[in-house]
Image (cartoon, rainbow, N blue to C red; front, side):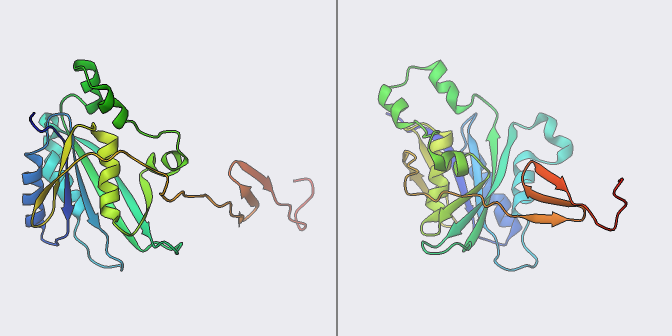
Length: 224
């Protein structure tokens, strides 16, 4: 049985723009029609000059903004990932990602155009009712444990955009790996919890989202 490639991932760890462009072109050539290329890179911990990885990838894949009418690629999205130590609440590192999709039938169309094995469908299921999915996975800012965070990122996208009988190609600086599908399991993942913070601005006190009341100034004319 021939291997089915469901998507391609590229991990960037270089500051050489020309090298990034060449690696993107190499990864693009392996993306099947309708499937995605996701690129990941780690953000510097300090302010300063940085390599414009996102714009480099987007322009390499989609071409110049003036030439995108005939492009066979589409923009998919961008996002960020914050990682944390097991015992800490402060982010340890930040990763960014950008995704583009080659034109063609999307992954879900397989179910409409061919008969899929019941086990393939079951193993490809996504826990959409899990609190981690609704609070984290379904957003474009993720919160993950720092240990093995890159694998967690790739496997999330693998679960979201490919079927369980498909492999993905992961391009590192010195090698290309084939990864089997890993069903998404959110039980041990972090669950972001929003905190309500009282804050004020001149004339209005905002206690919580959607509620506000005007503060009265005793020096003002009571008729106003």
